[in-house]
Length: 423
Image (tube, rainbow, N blue to C red; front, side):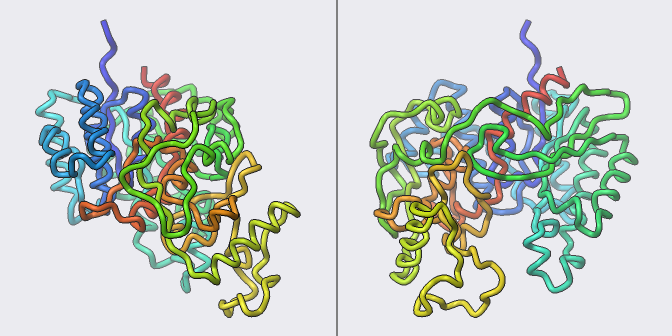
């Protein structure tokens, strides 16, 4: 007899990076709750992928990636129940009742009595070191500081055996640590003990230095035997160049949302990580345009890295190329994604703003990363499509979703460990 699928709810789901890891380990998503409309479109498109794959109709999804059918036609191929599992609401006092009703309806329709797991992490800007540095009041007045209280309401309502709460390392020091202490007190009050792990995505096979906090909670009457996620080693490693060398060359402002083909066979890393998974379809390999002045700076930055293995300091640029008045902070605002390292620097949502911090290592292309390249740095599979609110994908919306995401490859490894505990 096959084991019953473990169920979960994803709060503050974003584009679904954390959820993708749990789905890959055969968890059954009851609901994804996300306030951003574009991200909800991405979640719906990914839900369509999983539904069509499960029902041996994946060719329909491939038609969508090729631009042979539009988004409306794709969504017509999936049941309303699947679409209803994506809840485009902000979590909070105003909407929680309606969200609970929608989740309860699905649980009743599927005759599911228990939710095994809750995953997700509130928006991290209020806890991040960079966000606090840019804020006049150190983010003290930011309401996002208290979204963990809403998270606890879902724990109280659905009583899962475990939960996984992801956030930035800055949570450790935010409010001199008071937010984390208050979280622990609140989770304890709701009947959960917690363990806090400081993890690096690089240890999970992601080719990116991305440090995060993973808080794992469990019911008082349940004692898990968790491995030390802080020192986790998936055994998977490579070099950043292996993420890019099979993609077509682009110039700034060039590229196609749907679709193009690879220029070379896969490599061991792309295959083993699941980034390339057997189809010859590349989408969203599209680069933003740049001013000539910025492209000149990009060439200088790449040249310094290639010849000296050093980063460009903004103050070392010729005066004619300096347009920023701030010469004392953010002097590394132009940064190459070095292809000869085992991990890039962290991909963050600011990539949606200008791309200067994510310069492609090939000076002949002379541009910042494409949407697909950024998605690969986050370990998203190539068949993961990032939507805009409107039918035509929005490059800025895609970059924002990617930068805010949990790397699916890291999520997959965490899901394996959680599954071992729950089963």
